[in-house]
Image (cartoon, rainbow, N blue to C red; front, side, top):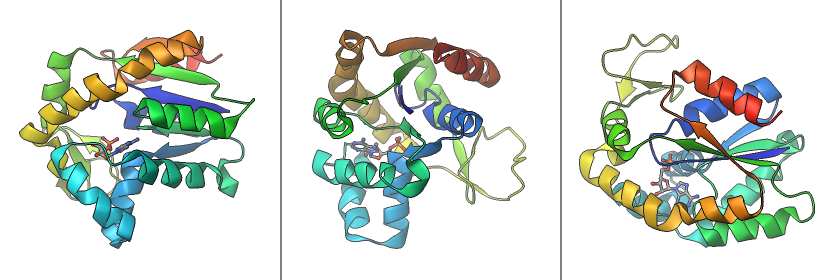
Length: 204
Ligand code: AMP
């Protein structure tokens, strides 16, 4: 089974993808996390991606496509995957469709959150240094680790650019998947567990 989570930055894709993948026994493949891992390891891909990511721009399609297709071909992804943050452009979506062939994507779940909420959500997002779980600055860090940080691209200027990039390059995928009859819309403004239930119900 292959599920794509679509939605603007700050919609909660990462949090929800993790829950859904756990609940369905699928792997969670987050292109942003994979790129950040490459950066941390100092690979050529990580170094190349860094300049784009810092400003909130998209990393070139060919680099991201190869990285994600390799990841979903690994043994643990044979049962399926929840894709989070990929595809983000029409080229990525079409290449993914071509790669999957007949079997194709099963569901595309669009998590909808109005723009006004997103800026505030991202500005208040801190991540656990160990497990990357998000917390608001006023929340108790209850993941069993200590230490929170703010992603550089969660700071004001990059966020505004990321939202613009979403509008111009990623939101056309809504129509692309609507036309394929695969898209389901989910209200992302509800409590986290309500959104999770709505997502799981949408794929029953
Ligand atoms: P995310 O963690 O999904 O918010 O992604 C963080 C950053 O990684 C994005 O702002 C992009 O610079 C880059 N990135 C992640 N996924 C993609 C993708 N599918 N295509 C291009 N760039 C990506």
